[in-house]
Picture 1 (cartoon, rainbow, N blue to C red):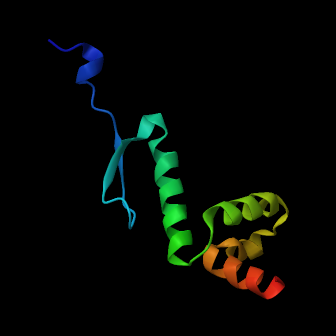
Picture 2 (picture 1 turned 120 degrees about the horizontal axis):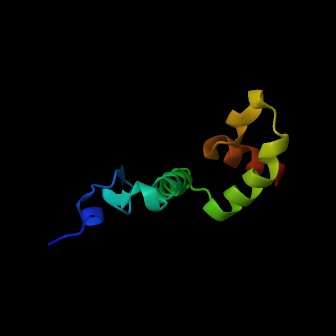
Length: 86
């Protein structure tokens, strides 16, 4: 016999990544955060951007970035801007 807590269906999030095929994670236990991170990492890999360098730079700049220029922080635009700066 299962407890009442075991009978409650937890909401789940579906996420997919080139490396992970349809992973089902519980939303309540950080699943949404994991889905966002998997998506961000997959986007970085698709644009051949190092996810760690990208996140480090973007998180340090996002607070001072004007709203009208937030699109410049997307991986595809970020890569072009950093390539030109180097």
